[in-house]
Length: 124
Length: 124
Image 1: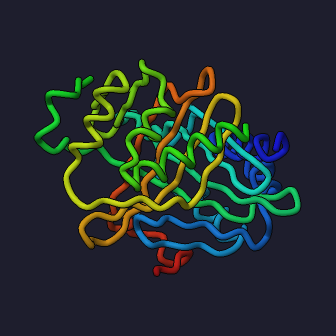
Image 2: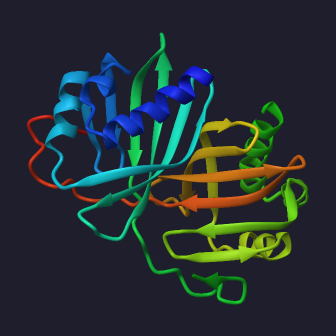
């Protein structure tokens, strides 16, 4: 578990640092990356590396929470790009043989709250 | 950790079953519930209970992944309401004294992938 926590933490930090060697070393060659919101999938470490190297903008990630057990992990992180408003995002991981074998990202966007709950809620 | 995993699992299952007694028993009286996407916050178990009791629709939750350690937990679950397309959502938890002291929900929505990565990606 400690090792998997460390895999997740290093994954985020190495991405933020563009340390592609350290980042790639965490991944199984057959890692699968998915973004369910767009129904996109990338198969394999090489393509996934290229996806991140080519991702435009001066983007940065900052960890908020990491949790991991023997099979699953998650990073809740803050994503900031080109000085825009930072957003929360989260990546779920699975592990095998000391490596990351899947990554699933979620990118929630701001929305207006539905009416009818103002009597219970405060806004910030 | 096992206890906190169980808190998270029971939280989702009791919500799905509208078992308000079992659900409330998991929560600290001063629990804080937040939805960062709408910047909404609900303070206290009583209001949070009322929020869920009043939430419209025949909604259901099904657990996909639960991870927890001593301080933090997460549930990645599938949310379905009134026969609409099921969506992924996630709730992060913090714990103290064997109870849930905070819940933070995220509700990611589908979006169109940006252009420029078609050479790396498959769609489903």
